[in-house]
Length: 102
Image (tube, rainbow, N blue to C red):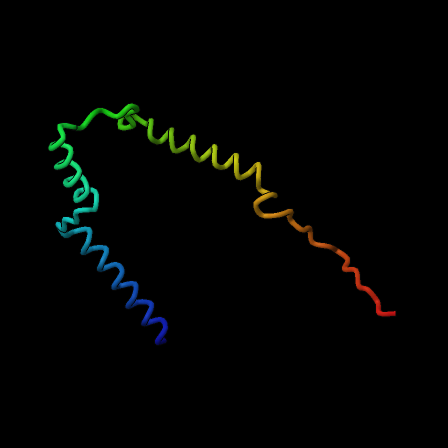
């Protein structure tokens, strides 16, 4: 009974935190804003500014395609080297060989 009550309390607290975070207007600035602010200040001092990226991944599904291609490449490499990485799988033996002490 106590464990069940504890589980319900934890579930209630978790759900209430989710509801609070979903309905509140909290602004949580990340590290990117802090670092970019400092970098922009020094970039303006030396006369360097923002430029367009060489490959703009914000258009369409290009970023998704790049991640899918990277995942497929990593999967191929890990699959090809599976036995070198994790060793040869041992097949379960139906019969066990027991050495006698005779």
